Image 1 (spheres, one colour):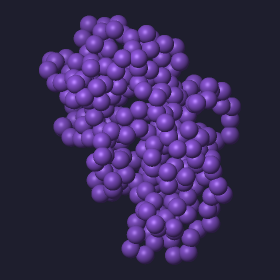
Image 2 (image 1 turned 90 degrees about the vertical axis):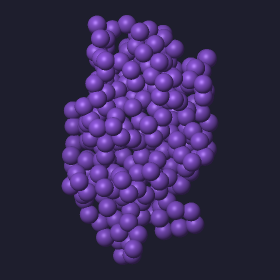
Image 3 (image 1 turned 180 degrees about the vertical axis):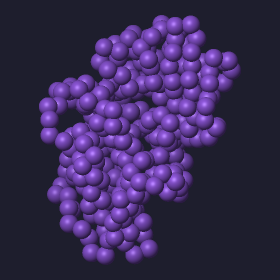
Image 4 (image 1 turned 30 degrees about the horizontal axis):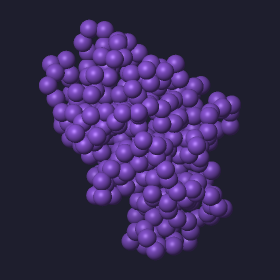
Length: 294
């Protein structure tokens, strides 16, 4: 990545945090080499066309499939004017304002896809009654030790398609751990106390033909929501591969709703896959009204 204005304070790894300053352009970005995407943290200064051109060059040189940013409504219009597509929203992400996910998707040759990000389709999920009763033989603990949580991501992150969403810390800062027999279950949360939201991840997705897994994960997810509520978290969201129906069913049963559909957002062995962003408020309060995702 050739540009002397880029600074990468963290050692190179699957996720790299970079800062870029040149002239009146100033921003930070996360380069995720595992999922071949890049998230922009924009400081609202500089020419948007120059920013777009900069990220187009990085996408081509690094073989990225996607560049995206999460911004307020007024800024989404500026990103759209230079070829980014709105893929959905995160209600209440900025506590009193919604966030809009603006994306630019690239071909295998590194060219921006003309006409914007292709529309993602995903199976429809109907919620059923969740399990909120502690399953027999399940031991549960709250984990906040950062070294242990980093190790959990090392052990389970790849299979769970885990992708950090925030700066500085590339693993959950709180998690609920359940153990049933020899099987470990983990629900992690990346919290943001400034804006009162959290990203939650099912780090041990339901296994095929294991009928007991969804009930355990629903119980642990509810325990995670209860813990986040105690921490005065107002809303939560989760990113789940579009075709991972069992995981989607778990969050749907806990009253999460789809608010964004993200094309080619993650990578697994069979190639690029889309993700659905599931959202839920957990603290009572006025929620800005959003246009539904169709």
